[in-house]
Image 1 (cartoon, rainbow, N blue to C red):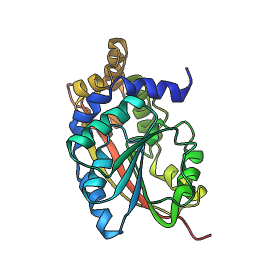
Image 2: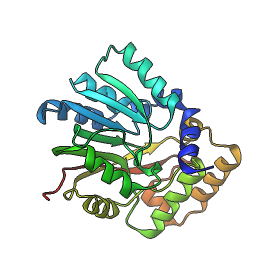
Image 3: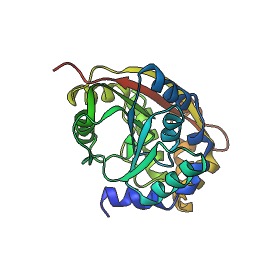
Image 4: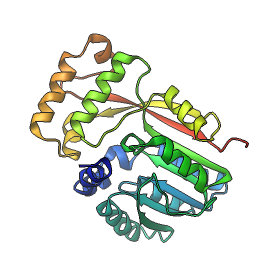
Length: 254
């Protein structure tokens, strides 16, 4: 099965779980997104890989007109229903691939992607598409898990991620994001990082990870070198910390 189809399948069957997930539905980053709308005078925003729509809702509640864009049609159904419940008329949905955005050049004041880019098959192509649909003075915000710069910890993180979710591609390092953004025509991002604790049982349940893979994740975490276990703050029940970053940038001058 090709990557796009695998991702759509994985998240199509778990859409409702992501709407109610505290990890995704809460966070200071959502409040920060909402605050961008008045501070940057955001009119039109694009939420790439919108999932259950939490970033879209935060932006629309602040007054932006938001296009929630995702590969999985069931996710978009969840977004449309929840937007109606919240009476957020500024949210519309669109299905498609981040590698071929169905929008005219310079269409959006803001493009945001939250916990989605680590599923993208071709990040350079997607970022070039973002650059194309973003206005010259527009803003891009990437919120995602980032890999440690240490190769050992990077390897352990990627291993447990792909065991939990077969559609995982890569959590990129901050240094890698800097290079990817520069190559796509963006300025060096302003970055903030924090730790997000993954409660093990709900983390695997949300993705409906098969039991054999759950056992493999537990074995990897239990047998990982001390340096990796300490960096990830692995707890006795298997819960651990994920490093997350907010990366904000604009198109660089031509």
